[in-house]
Length: 143
Image (cartoon, one colour):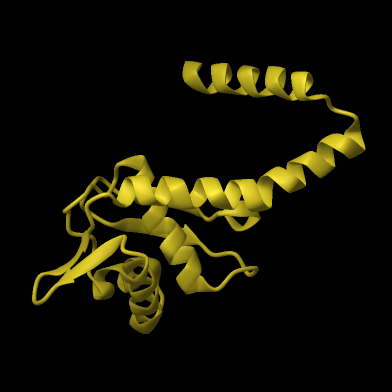
């Protein structure tokens, strides 16, 4: 998801997406795939659960249905969702694990090198970073 992480407002589970602010740095269909992946990780969408139809998602996001369909095709190609003819798209078994693995690889190949470069430029040691991360995690757990 990287720097182009989308800011989203999810509706009550099962009601789809209320709104989304798109980034100009990444194709909209890829941002929609990120949105669905975030929903899978957050538990908004669970395995074997139906996700909003192409039309529903397009209306909620105010995008062309073809854009949503392209996003769903991408997710289907990755094995994260599948189509039940006449019923819609559903989250595949094992999707949460697959999304986590994909994002971990992405973090390792994209974010970690960037973080390492920033740490080097700012003379931040691994120990200092660990302290910062622990403080951040503790702060978020209290919220």
